[in-house]
Amino acid sequence: MKRLNYYPSRIADQVSWLQNLAIKLAIYGPNMTIPTGEIGACIDDAKWCAYVLGLWLAALRTFTPATTDKVDEALTGTSDTVITLPTFSAPALPGGVSPQKAGALTRIFTMVGKIKRDASYDEAVGTDLGIIGPVESGEHPVPKFTIEALPGVGSQVVRIGFFKFTHMGVVIECRRNGGAWEMLGIDTESPYMDERALLAPTTPELREYRMRFWDKGTPNGDWTDVAKVTVSP
Image 1: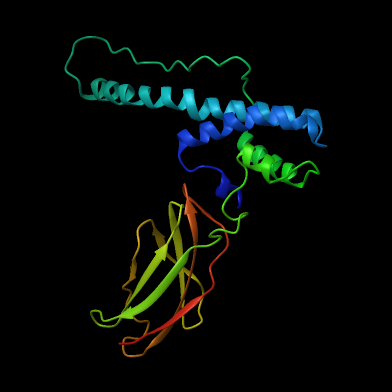
Image 2 (image 1 turned 90 degrees about the horizontal axis):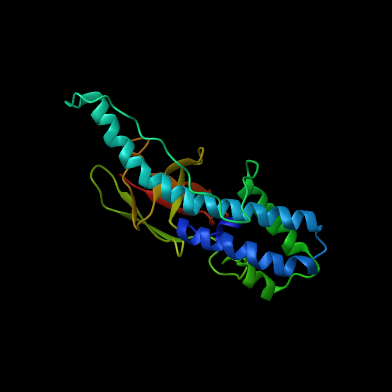
């Protein structure tokens, strides 16, 4: 999912990215061969997503603690007063913003692909729209990692040192003695220690490792090359 390489991981940055896309797409859209209606629909989707992630989500997060307090009061409070439950009032939609069908962000990512295939597209346009990510510039398409077998209790353990670069974390998988790939875990801080016992307590085993990036709960990007190490009793 290359889209995650240009789409920010922080919500505040996502709002800014969406707002910039809406503004700049209105400028570059007329020079593209993409139908005007599709460009306009993408702008509407970007404005809507920016509202949902910005004003609406911020108001909801402010409202939520009040609901928790009110639930506690309703269930275990000691007051004789009849409880009035709070109701959430969504922020007013800014001018030019209207609710859109489900999947607005997915449609935006699809449109980004069309934009990059358009005859008018070049690196300057992509940079201004904010749709050029590290993978496209040749920087760190996959994590970098090293493995090392170290003494452990009962058998050796494997230390996995990794570089996640600008990503939130990595997904690590392993297979033993040519078996199926198993997910070891998701890690955001190097190193990861594989301290599992041997399949056969007295027999060395071959372990193969690979990893890919992880951002906002989603694995993304390609798998790294496979690295191998023999783990001994």
